Amino acid sequence: MPETDTAYSPQVTAAAAAAPPIQVLPGNRGPGLILRGAAVHAREDPAAEAAAWVKEVVGRWQGAGGAPELALVFGLGLGWHLRRLKELFPKLRVAVFEPDKGFLETFEKYNVLGRGDALRIFTDPGEFDRFTSSEVVYSDAVFPLLMVTPGYHLAFPREAARFMDKVGEAVGRLKVIVKTKKATMSAFMDNLVENAWLATRLPDLMLLKGRFMTRPAFAVGAGPSLTQNGALLRGLGDKGLVIAAAAALKPLLRLGVCPDVVVVIESSDTSRFLRLTPEEKAKVRPGTVLAAALGSHPEHFRAEGFDKALFHLSGGEAQLLSQGYFLPQGGNAGTACFAFAYVWGLSPVVLVGQDQAYLGPQLHAEGTVDSLFEADRFDSIRIPGIGGTAVESNTGLAASVNWLAEAAALILSKGKGPRLINSSAHGAAVKGFEEIPLEAVVANLPAQPKTWTVSEAMRSLPRPSARELRGDLKQMSSLLSQTRQLVNRNVQRALVEMMNISKVSAFMGELLAPALAGGNRQGILKNIAWADGVILKMLASLEKGGEA
Image 1: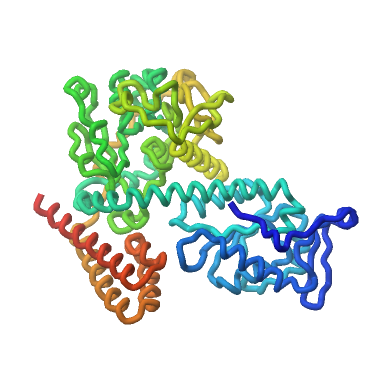
Image 2: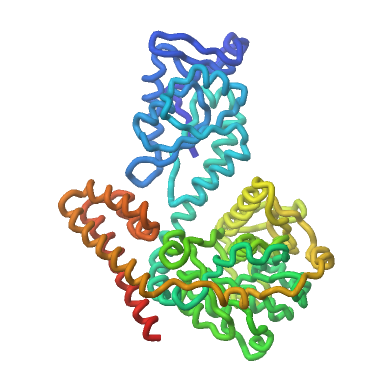
């Protein structure tokens, strides 16, 4: 969360409080500014004042080396602080939340910015929140530079507090995401390497975009309340598509419900969710699809009794191995089920068993493999629950709730999209979702014409050419070899070249991200060697697939 700069914090006197709300003060070195009695820019030397404050703020930046890419600023003022930012970081993207919409006219008249200094200016808190989530939470580990001008903090204390809370929340979630990525990146890449050959054999379900419009979808998680109302999904037939997290498969089969699609994203081995007893196998309908992330554990693809398909979790992976479409998700398979429903064009999208919370001692539905081994509650928190209650959750699940709420806000902001319903019998409230009991939703489902199943629809999807993939990977390996030589001659030129490579190939950008984040020559060479090893192993995987 940003700190205010006490070195320049002005004092609001009684006389100043009675002054006009906006005062532009002429000065020998440029105009100063007072808002609501609080000095935003001192007229004695506003440029020097802003430079000193910006220096301190930049010193507190949490980014990992290099220059910041994004600044989130509370208050336009006359732009002295914004001009200094652009002087220091010419390529910096700057987004400003201005709490007083009426001030925009003054800013346009007196601002000191150059014509080429483009800004994103927001006056609507909701729009700024959506922008922040999009650019911070779902960015490629871009930690923003956070700035709250001291004068604005005094003039608009309530709005400033909200800004700091919202931006601080987004940055906190980004830290969790970055920490998770660091913990799973190695396993994810190891899995991707071993599974690479499957990209030429299995269909990519993201290519079914918009294929199932008008049909309802039930995005099913493995929350403990699934036991209470999951049986209502029995016998839906063509009235709705059931997309379930792998952890919910056994509880659903126990309730007599066979999902149409089973989704798994975990990089660790969770194939225990998919290993079925003879009795369970008998309840699985022919054509039930197992959708596994290509970077998930190889054991998931060895599960028997399903029509298998894949999807991609990163833009780089999707660009290299498919047509560039990757599945956004909020950290667990339940949110991935929701994402599939939205991407495929289904409506309404109904959450079931998406508790994202404890129910008594349980975190999973009865019959789930993990239901008898619940996690310790070391990070337990209270969050708003269905029906205006409060429920016990944890930080990871709360992050998934926030992701769903932000996805809903984005969908609703477009003015079109699916109706969003939360029919979980218990658990977290999700902003943007109507709360309707599942019984009422199912009872009012209209009859649907017979249509293709997911299994039938995916059969005609294109697969990438193994030959072309091998050619792309060999070219990447050659580029890395040239870059390695350049690093030994000139590190800075090599970093520029790696940036250029990353702009052309998102996958190379993901591999080279540690080097681009900064480091010495030996660290960069180590990263390049690792990246080259990943590519060579993927080539070997494709060769293995050719022999299979």
